[in-house]
Structures are given as C-alpha cells and as structure tokens.
Image 1: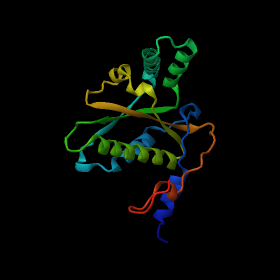
Image 2 (image 1 turned 90 degrees about the vertical axis):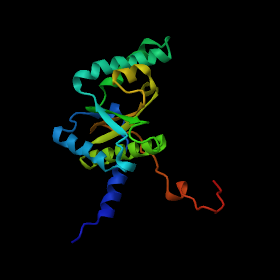
Image 3 (image 1 turned 30 degrees about the vertical axis):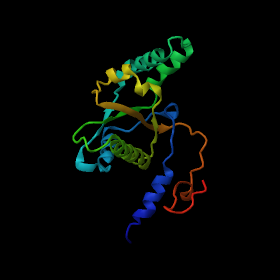
Image 4 (image 1 turned 180 degrees about the vertical axis):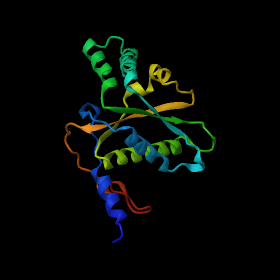
Length: 199
C-alpha cells in the first residue's frame, strides 16, 4: 500500500499546537533528535540559496546570563519596573529544556532579495522545526516580545548590524496545555481577485 503523504501531512499540521515555554519541561530532545529537528529547517524555501537566517542555541550554562539579559532589557524599557516584574522577566531565561534564537540577516548575499522575502524564508524554517518537534511528540512555541529588539540582547548574541532577532523557539515535553483556540477556515483568509470582498 502506498503512503498517503497528504493525509500524514494534514494530520501533522493539525497536531501542531503552541505550548508556551512555561508549560514545557523535561525531558527535552536528545542530541540526535535535536539534529533531526534543526535539519528540518534546511527544507525551507530560500530564493537564490542565501541562507538569510540562522539559529543560535542557548545551552544550559548560558541560561543564567540570558535571564539577566531579559531583566536588563525590561529595565531599559522601564527603569521603574517593579522587582516582581524584573524577576518575572529573568525567569524567562530558564523556561523550556531547549531554547534557540532565530535570526535574520537583511543584507546577506544579495541586496535584491528584500527583507520581507528573507523573513518568509525564516518563518518557513521555524515552522519546519515546529512540525518536526511535533512529529517527535514534543511541545513547542515561538515567542518574541520586546526583549528581542533590545540592544542588550543584540549584544549578548553577538548579532551583526544587518541582523535582527526574530523570535525564540522553545521545545520540550508538554506538562500542560492552555485553552485550544479555534483555527480559521480557508474562507477566513482566502479571497478571489476581482470578486467583491465583504470582509
């Protein structure tokens, strides 16, 4: 019997759900699983093969330093932030067993390939990572927030001036799940050129 790839793909995509980092715990993916998960990103569309994005993993021994970066980023935005808010920001550095930052370079390779196209490629790479993690039975999430735009985070990760942090990808075992959101239907986001749009 031939494999029904369309059915398998539909089932996998339907199974993917965002599990926020504070709901992710051990065990996380092992080294071999992480290699497979991250290798899935290579299948993302990439016009002219620029590889305009990259991932920076955050190992366990750098989590405390990252936690301080989150705290500093909050204090840069709000020097009067309450101690409990600073502590909450710091806590983000320790969430989820596996954490990686997705970065996009706005200039790498070919100036004719605009930032929007580079971001689309990066988004596809991230989705491939999420889908592979889902296929392995792990929970995952993309998270951003104001800290990814902070100068302190930019320096911490050693980003070039042409690079921008897009989001973090968190992966681990889902310890709990939030409320499931109803997904939009095709009619909610597809229209026909020339037809009257009543939305």
